[in-house]
Image (cartoon, rainbow, N blue to C red; front, side, top):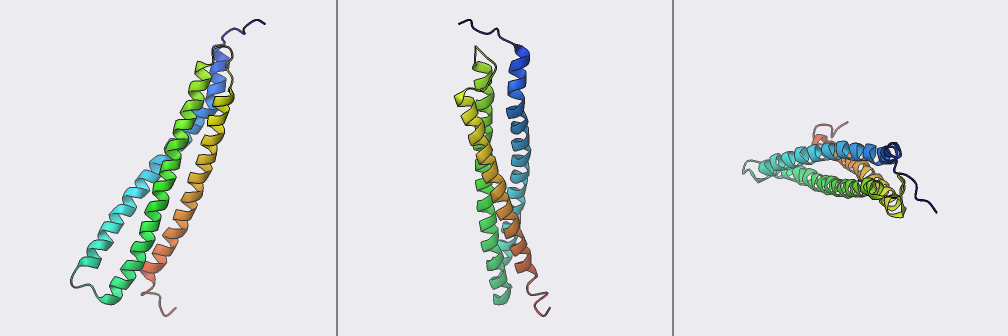
Length: 151
């Protein structure tokens, strides 16, 4: 059986989808990294207020509720970032499998496996982002609970 000729156009076509996914995952990861930094900064501010001697016990209770929510948010964002990082590695593996396939510019079993696993990890990361958004709403509610207590 003759070996098909190497076709650069086919190679580029086969690599386009994973490369687009790499770009999308990298953009999401950048947003998650920024969010992680913002949440961490807010936690530092709240813990500083909690530790001040002039903070009332009622305020400390509210701060503790918020800090618990922020801790859960940090964990969700960290897990989403970890999943996206793994997805990026798998998407890169997909591209490499396309490039290294000498006979045909197509996804082999390894490339297809990397692509599917990367997509599943991306779905997991986006799901964790939805959890974090929900926790953010709870944190805002906790911050405002003493202001809107009577309403």
